[in-house]
Image 1 (spheres, rainbow, N blue to C red):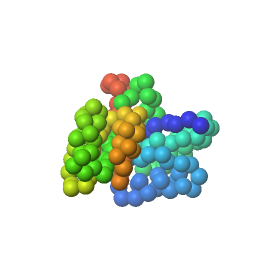
Image 2 (cartoon, rainbow, N blue to C red):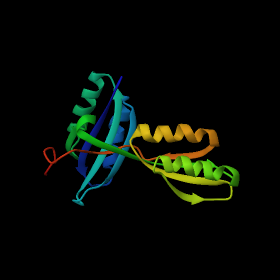
Image 3 (cartoon, one colour):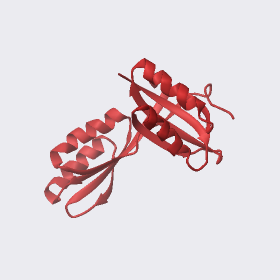
Image 4 (cartoon, rainbow, N blue to C red):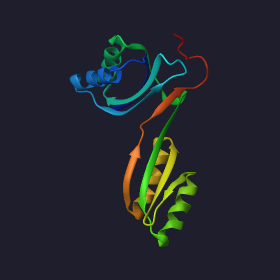
Length: 165
């Protein structure tokens, strides 16, 4: 099993995300992560999809997505030529006795404390998946209450692969 990160530029119309997700569902493909947002051009939405499967399945995913009428462009974001980031918020049980230790761990990862309650903290971190996973592993000792992850957003490096429509 391999993972591929696909970047799509699609028409910014209602239902486009649903049609793309439906294609995956109908074919039995798994979406590990999906993010979407409007681009500098308000007529276009950039969607980043992380999918897994063998080479044949991943090739079929790309071909099937390319056929959708809303899709203007699809390309693979290869790790060596791209930058990936993910946002994660982690709510940790932390009373007064544990708060300083949780904050110290967050500081090592350049994470921010975005909320403090009497019995919990919310830590916000942005980075690659391995950085987020490492922080989560360390915070497991302090009883994680909730986690919210955005999924990967990515762009290719440099100016050679910019899609102009």
